[in-house]
Amino acid sequence: MEPHRFSNSRCTRRAFVLSLDALLAIVLAAAIVLVGAQFARQEPSDAIQLGLGQTGRSVAAVLEREGTLDTLDASQLRSRIDDLLPASHVMRVQLTCQSADAVSTNETLPTRRFIATGKRHFVVTSGGSVTDRCVARWWVWNA
Amino acid sequence: MNRRAILLTVGAVLIASAIVGYAALAASQQSDVGKLAAQFAGYERTAEAFDGVAQGFVEIFNTTSGITIGTTNQTIRFTETLPNTASGTFSGAVSSWESFLESNESAITLSTGALTSTLAINLQPHNINYSHDSFGGNQLIMSPSTLPGNRYDVNVTGSFIIVSCLETTTSGSFELNIIIDGTLGDCTKNLLVDPSANNRIQIIIIDPADPLGLATLPGFDINLNATKLFVTRLNATTATISTQLWYNASGLERREARLLPETLISVAFSRLGISRTGTAILRSW
Image 1 (cartoon, each protein chain N blue to C red):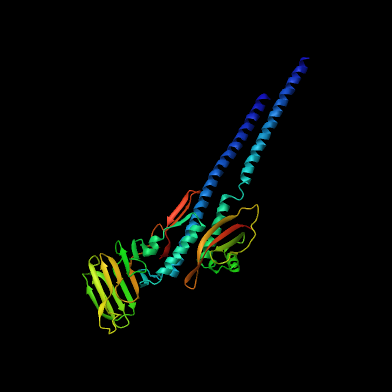
Image 2: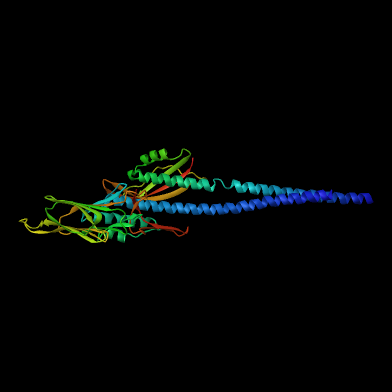
């Protein structure tokens, strides 16, 4: 009877150790998955988001300074944006003015993707006078 | 067997703790980076709003003020008519810009009162103001806190008949060059004066209202007093005034001409806790 009791106790202990190991393995795996998820969740990174915003602001500023916004012409805007914007980016610009009709380059905004956005106020000048006051709203995202 | 199991268990617990700790640290740091990124984006948004408004003022000035600014390495020249006939257009454009902005963006407030009343331009780094007694009035003023060079040039061109130029000056080493060009007659003076004293040149013209053309009266007054230059239209018809300030040749400094007041534009995004106040830079050279 004695050897049997001993064998039963050893079995129980071994089962306990195995269970504990299994539990720890699960905890370890969960920790690894958590850490992985933490990094995976950061896509796109803050740097990429800020970069998109800076690109949008820079392009909008150039369009204003060189007078392209003043044309209030969607095709001219589109053409100039294509010149200025990196190929990996897409930008939509919409102009809303006090007097003139609204103008938009009309790209469809994507879903489930980070979109940087901003706006810039500007005056429209023509023939030596101020003819309108507008706001340019822009959206930039990765293609 | 027992000892080995305990060691294995303790080791596994340590590794798991390290990984979970690292994850917590990374999450915390990521949160800090996220906050900084949001703050940076807020600054960028503020800068974009400010820059657009300031650029609008520059375009309004260039298009409607009737003042042209010319610069070289050693000079800055302002040219406009006196009285400035564009003052009403400028004030109207500023007022429309102000109401457009304030109705479209609650974060933006403007202080345009002083801008439209005297239209003053500040020159940095020497802190020199070019302004008017009232914009659209009869006097313009160049007031340096210290003179950056050794010369002023004043050119006046208009439809009047010059009889004489009367000068009352204190001699010194500062160059004051005056060229008055009328329909008939002109007056050119290359004077060496003491800029800290009171120096006056008065241009006497034929009274434009006298049908016989015999009566005379003072048409313009150019006064350099305590380094300040005043050009005043007294009785002459509208004339073009060009005022040029000279800098010392040594300057490699970066110079700016800015609209006053310094608090012309205010952008405040209270939700982000970010604000910026400043003015528009008309030119840097």
